[in-house]
Image (cartoon, rainbow, N blue to C red; front, side):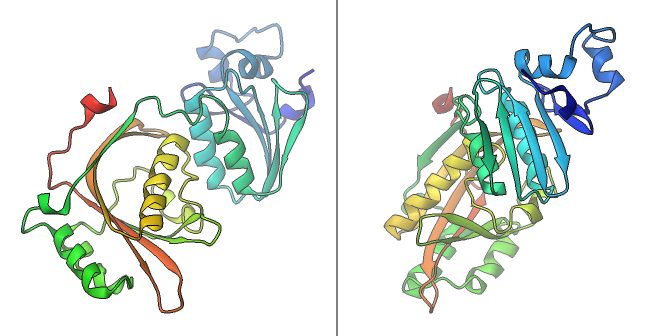
Length: 287
């Protein structure tokens, strides 16, 4: 039976990703449930894909039903979660008898993202490899590749910073590849077209795959991992739909370059940047 006493100080993410207080009269009015005879929030979780969260400093109690949970609600919840400073919590899935204890933020993100349907690609992304010889002579990506070739496999961000800042709008992501295979975000450029400004700070130190839009995060992480394993730069035309709370589905079309390299102490880094010099449109591939 769903625990009724856990809805105090609770928030709810609806199936459109909108955050509500669990006792919101407006939510009940919009659902035509002002005089609902039962326990409304548990029934919304059970039947309509809502996600309910009881938040205490550093800890969350998440109530959902994995078979019906809205992907949009899950993404909105994960964006909210990453910005709360949460370090642990538990998940009560109405489709399971057991309660999942999560000892870390990463464990919470991974568990919610693993639910069927939440991390599905939904045909919202397409990628096409680009040969470096296809780049225009004036392309700043060509200049970055030349810098990498001259470096002998070393990667010093300062060698690329001026070009990225002056010619690529300061759009970049700098990551480190760990021995265990994780790709960890170290720095991001403020020129990235990200609707949520809080993302620029909350993402630092987190796994690249742990984007709130888990499908997009996994796709990006796989691209970086391939470059790390090959230790060769990769250029791709990308066409992706990304879900941002408050914005909905946002389409991004760009040409991306990922460069691998090591530092003097043997650490492995990956630097990615993108441009819009090409008329990227892979919608026919994503359809």
